[in-house]
Image 1 (cartoon, rainbow, N blue to C red):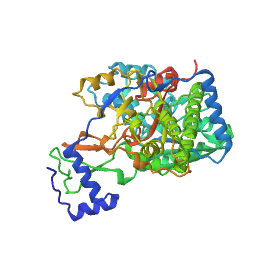
Image 2: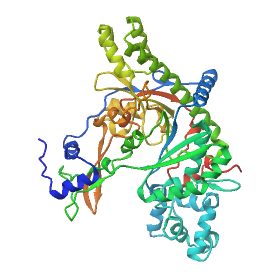
Image 3: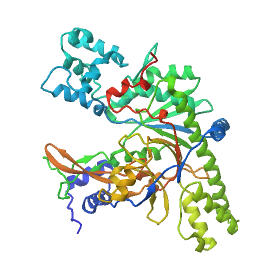
Length: 514
């Protein structure tokens, strides 16, 4: 039985301030009571069933398709980069070193960091910070065994403050004449493959405390990149909406209250960004993580495959629009409907049961519902053992089967078949998406209508030493896009170069040529 919650006047005021209705708050509390159902998996997606391998003439055709689309004009293209949150997880091993009861590098991670400290793009900035804070540079500090002082200058507010800054503002790559942050690498990428009619639109989602820092960097470097690429770059920022926060609960499923009696709200996870994506006035949107960038010398593969994915999106979208016009005109025969159903099954990899038994009117209605949806093309890479989600074929609530990107939290840990499919999946989701978010009449889809609310999850956290339950919204590229039409394309691993720890910056892909 669902617990009845009595909201206080102060609770109601908190909800109003955040833009959260009482009904929404009670629905969130009901999630703690009921939990979320596990998804039913038909199989892992593979090149045998749902993942396309594109090469040679086909890839050339799609890049030309994309070039033509951009040259036509009248299309707005945006690069959407989730960039909120501090980079503290990047430095967790160094934070642990600061708290350790020893002063010399001891673990392999710590030793690697100091052995190669000259190879980090931020070395010069850190050396300057050490001079200011400690009166001597990095090499002198190392000679005196003052390793923790160096780390404190890297992470602390008196130094570079990298422990609190977002990844987008850290110095990742060294060039002959400069160093670049991920923000700058994304501006470069946008100019190379996501511009139309000489304009590139780039949108970053940021935390409120970092917004001015992003704006300052864009102000300082924006003109340089526009001159270099002869493209006008428009940068916009947005913050995660307070209305997407979720109420925390006690382990007993009641609202978690702070010592002053106020409700505790937590960010709803990256799935909350579907609201930010929904606010974009764009035809096509590229989505890519902030830390998956490489120096210019390695960008060719990234640009090539972004153009292939975008060309495929345009090609498929045009066919979808053709079928939608046919359905809306009502000028079709059974053979026309069967061709549209074949396209749905063979190109969009979506199976609807019992279509043979449907009348023309019933089949047309099913096709209209399945085709008139946002479209995304997902680049996937061969499984490298990285933590995260992957591509699957999943049973929907309407008994259809369609491709999805799933995270481990959506899969029943007690279902051995589902767990086997997840662990043995051949491909991994690197968050490499190209999205079409308008319908065939040029109207923006309301992306919130294509979220599967049953795909959230509950995690165990703590606050001030007290246990709590936290509600995560359906993730941006899994549950929040659950009801999109989805195509999956194998892309080379050279396009996937994430930076999860600071030592990842020592990988050859993030270093200048020797």
